Image 1: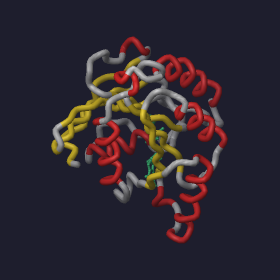
Image 2: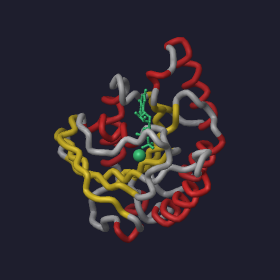
Image 3: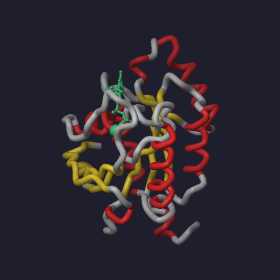
Image 4: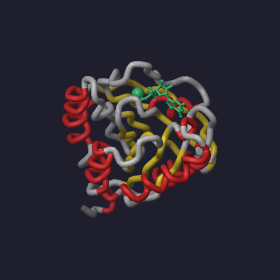
Length: 202
Ligand SMILES: Nc1nc2c(ncn2[C@@H]2O[C@H](COP(=O)(O)OP(=O)(O)O)[C@@H](O)[C@H]2O)c(=O)[nH]1
Ligand SMILES: [Mg+2]
């Protein structure tokens, strides 16, 4: 799959600020500082998202429009506020609760849980995954910052992640580009599947 462009559309403070058109929406879910914004920039091959050195900065949902060249396709990427960061964690969690919980039941076509490859099995990530998996949208897991793990530790960390989430986990690095082509393909697949909402399933 070839990403033609990623464009920042706008920040949204409320669920009602998100588009209600027929373009599929992919929600990015993860702890603050896990690398969601940088991942969006890496997918875009240019800087469209603000990457923060200070965790927990994003209090808004950021909406991006992603155009795929082949196969021709358009989707929104919704970067949600992060959850569960230790410092300011209560605020982050409240943001996640009010926004994400209101959004998910009728919102996204698919959700991508982004976890830090270096910290397998974090309780907040397991809780988020359990919650996501029960929702009527397609889900997948990405382990970010794989470049920060020495090669010898990568296999074990990914195995631990896969065991604790009981799901396949795709390792990526926004820095080295590792796994990004697979991620683009994964996103295209998620975006092209009909949503359970559309199917009328629960
Ligand atoms: N080494 C490395 N650092 C990363 C990677 N992705 C993000 N970071 C760094 O992690 C920090 C948080 O990234 P950011 O994208 O703002 O996280 P967000 O809060 O999930 O949006 C920044 O300092 C990034 O440069 C990665 O793949 N590898
Ligand atoms: Mg961010």
